[in-house]
Length: 336
Image (cartoon, rainbow, N blue to C red; front, top):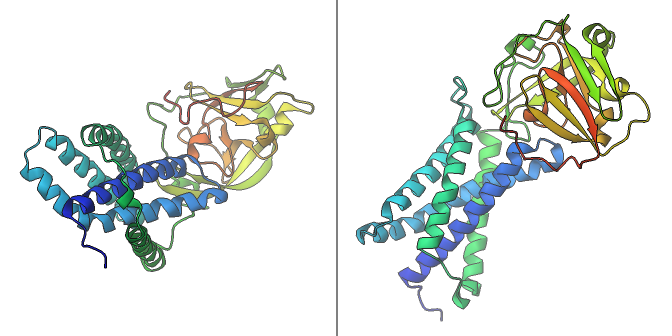
């Protein structure tokens, strides 16, 4: 006959479970935020399940919190701050999923969700240092694994029901549709401190550098009329499928290009590096929905990168350079 668990043992296992869950949620959330291909849809699903795991664990965690607050430990305010940001991340994630709050300015539910997630990292680290949780043999018992399966089963059930009856209209990235086929309804957003530059198409020149050394003016770019229907899936939590017109990058660069990667740079300094193998499926667009690009949407030319999140769709493109550096040798996001 199994002995009942002591409050201390239950509390320790709950803390360990929350630590593992929050760590996995941070990893899957970061990957989901950056990646936008259908092959990574499972990351979004797992991230949502982990969110429900946190909710399920909230009940056994509450007596642990009450005991901790009653002891008046010096770092209890850091613990309160951690609970606050985790709660904030859960609420903003739920608000985004339900699509009940339209973004205002640079703020959006998913943007605040990311802010809360980042804020949680140092607080979790402080919590681990000041209150280390050591795994003991009893933590790996049959009872523990049954508890793990029970929590996971509840979380999976909640997530499946939520997706089916509450939030079934999202893309596999978790984004909501906005203005597909209606360019004027597609939101205009900038990356961090980017400010839409005013570029006269008659003065615009695209510099091709590296394996190719030549300039392309707007007249030449307008001579390319390839059309492509592609979905821009923004990290701000929305997606929009539009018809783009422009030049395939392989046609612009010409045959026989060499190198390992392709760097696309904006007039603002923003840049992203791509594997050279992607050159045949990317476009430098000058029209959106049959009309010249607007300033906010990247005029005179912007990159169209199907299968990638919006942060890869460089606006106001000024230079494309081939390189021998691997494409992954860059920061996950650009800070300029």
